[in-house]
Length: 79
Image (cartoon, rainbow, N blue to C red; front, side):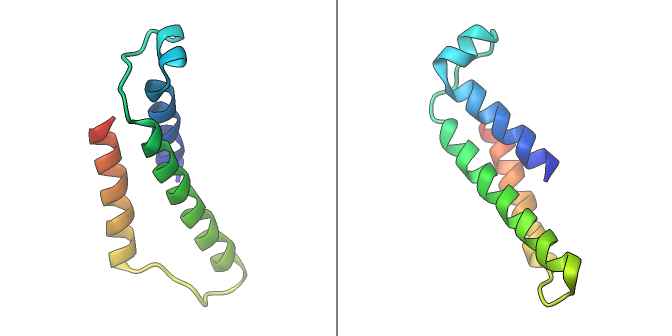
């Protein structure tokens, strides 16, 4: 979840021309949409933690963790 937050921040900062210029980062057009994807990943992880803390009616199997890892890896490559 922390990796998704950091990747989302980097995607937003490099996708915004004003912030990228101010922070001396290379501007990458189209990466602000990846920040939305990272926010969705963080929301999914928070929802899983919320329902997992009280009891275990919801669990993430191997397919869910592989999908989250693939989303973060693809986001990292795209940034």
